Amino acid sequence: MSKLPDDVHPHYLPDQLRRVMPDLGPVFYIDNWPFGPQMLVVASPDAAYQITQEHSLPKYPAMRTFLRPLTGEYDLVTMEGQLWKTWRTIYNPGFSAGHLMTLVPDIVKETTIFCDILREHARNQDIFPLKEATDNLTMDVISRVVMDTHINSQRSHNEMVSALRRQIPWLTFGTEINPIQRYHPLRPLVHWYNARQMNKYISRVLEDRFAGYTNGETMPAGTARHSKSVIDLALNTYLADAAANQTAKSSMTAKGMDATFKAFAISQIKLFIFSGHDTTSSSICFVFYLLSKHPSALECLRAEYQEVFGPDLTQTASIIAKDPHLLNRLPYTVAVLKESLRLFPVVSSTRVGEPDFSVVDSHGRQYPTEGCLVWSIHHAIQRDPAYWPQPDSFLPERWLVPQGDPLHPIKGAWRAFEFGPRTCIGQELAMLEMKIAMVMTLREFDVKAAYEEWDMLKSKGGRKTVEGERAYQIILAQPSDGLPCRVKMAAE
Image 1 (tube, helix red, strand yellow):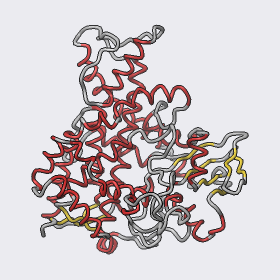
Image 2: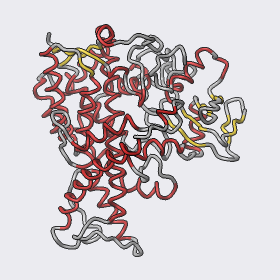
Image 3: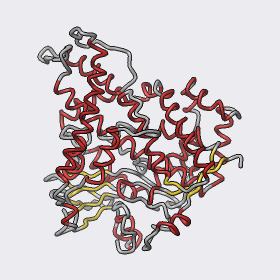
Image 4: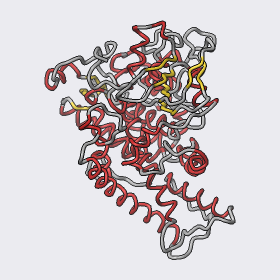
């Protein structure tokens, strides 16, 4: 780790170990005593399959410690067993590909504001952190999708967004080496205050949505009202299940929302907004970064958009809104997205080992998991030359070649959204958001990373690259320094 920047994301460590110790193999232990638990690193598709699909290990408890100040006790990431299955089923309809297509006009509206902001930066010719702009875009999108609420964080202040952003720096896994960081005396107070602000805002939204159902009368169980938001579809599913189950007593009346549903809904909304905005925002940044370094790929994308959406850039937004299914005719765009997510994955999977369960490597060696943090590290898998020819190169073409070609990806080696029952519920939305952002910006703007200028103005010295990449990933897998950039109009 001494050869890496101080703020680098920990998922670089196993890949760096592989590079200096190629005979180590894709499954190995790391002893973190006395600072943390023993870790079993899983860095092969087959081993990852064993812990996520063949035998889905429970999520590691530190993730619950990290998320609790945001979500409380009831989020889909850390719930287990039948409770998780029940609530995952309730929220699945809102994230289905078919339903999300109905939300495309709203996503286009938010992305139009993002384009306006890029135009302003182009006129000002300034350097700015792209991550701030994409954060605000994805925050507005996820709020539309989940709550059918236009919070306009791209242009104005929002109390819920402010509380969320204040909360994030105070989150902890409870494993930090620095005792001040781990046991800061103000943390509980900060957590309580910010959670209270978020809960008040979301509670008002939920009650407003519920009022649309009741109209002053008791709502018939299972009644469906046409709506676009995830939370409304979840409410429909919850009520339908309550009606089908004769022992369930729904208290959804004009007097108020069912307390159980409301508590779980507030937790899920905060989870969706946090994870749904930050990971997608970072992924959009890495797409811009890679395309700024590979102009030939950018030209291929522009040609694809010219063919599908026509030459008039001013009509692109309205064309997408009127016919969202055109977004399914963009094979090179999907290839660029998958390649960017391969090089810069924004998630990994941490599980807790179990007695009598071992991971078996390709040589038949068994690695007991009991007492271990079992870490499936997507960055290590997706940069391993054993599975990927030219693993550090940006090659969208690898996603377009036929099976049998040396470049064709190995099954299970791309794990950007994980596999198995705990696969990311928001993956369809993330891909849809990124497609729309690319289509609406890449023909109009040239976005160039400006790290050299930024470092001259802001850098405090120290190592600032990982394997030659200045836009290495830091905490929460974000681009370093928020990806400082300059924007100009492509016509210039």
